[in-house]
Image 1 (tube, rainbow, N blue to C red):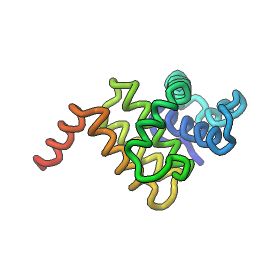
Image 2 (cartoon, rainbow, N blue to C red):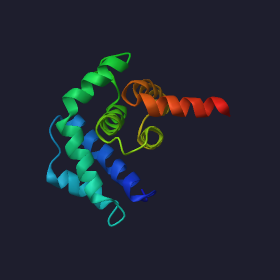
Image 3 (cartoon, helix red, strand yellow):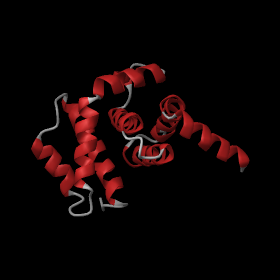
Image 4 (cartoon, helix red, strand yellow):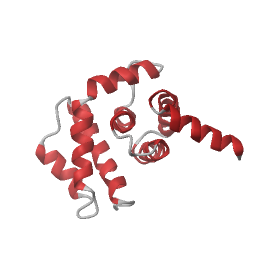
Length: 151
C-alpha cells in the first residue's frame, strides 16, 4: 500500500496498525512491530508524533477505555479490533492533545476506519466520536455544530 497523506496522517495510520497488532496479539507492541509499521512510510512519517501517539494511547488506555465504555452501545471487547484501535487513538487525541482540533481528530479517525475497517465501520466510529466530542471537547463541538447549522 502506498503511503498517502501528510506526515501526521501517516503517523496515525502507523499507530492504528501497531495498536491493532497489540490488541490482536494481546500484548504490548514490540520494537520490531513498531519498526515494521513505520518502515512502510519511510521518511514520510512524523516519527516523534507516532511515538507520542503510541506512548500516550498505551499509557492512558485504562482511562480511554472507561470513556469509550461510557459512550458505546456494547462491550469494547466486542468491537472490531480495527475500530477499537481507531477509537482509542482518537480518544487519546481528544483527551490529551487539545492543540489538535476536534474536527481534525474526527476526520482523521473516520478516514482511518474507511481505510482499515469494515464496510460500515467508519459510520460507527463517526457516531461514537461525535458523541464523545460533545463531552470531551464541548466548546469546539458546539462551535462546529453551530457552523454546520449556518450552512
